[in-house]
Image (tube, rainbow, N blue to C red; front, top):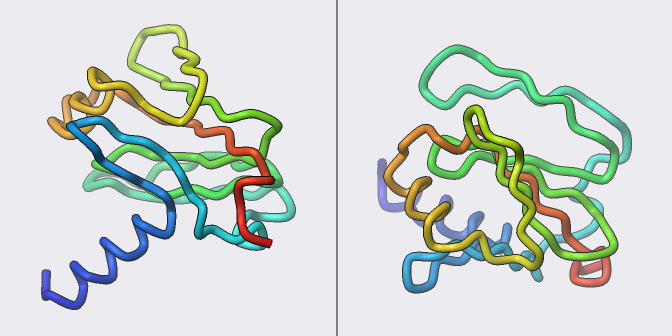
Length: 127
């Protein structure tokens, strides 16, 4: 990866509000604009080093990958995070911090986390 590519990736994660502090991931997308979220449902096709995968996105959402895991932002009333892990009931975390254990699992690419859904209040976005 060239220096410019790395800089672009880091800049985009900052825009997306992905913050790592003391080994914990937080989602604080204060630079995102509301018009970056899709206006109608659509399928998202992505690959994280293997076979192509598909995730159905609802209106008012956007998606990206982080450490090989799909992250879906959804417009909502309150901040919360759903962690979908292998063979486990999704865990609901109030607020915008993923927690150290889940964050470390992502960083280590343990393949435990299958998807992360982050609910974001529209009031926190730029208009």
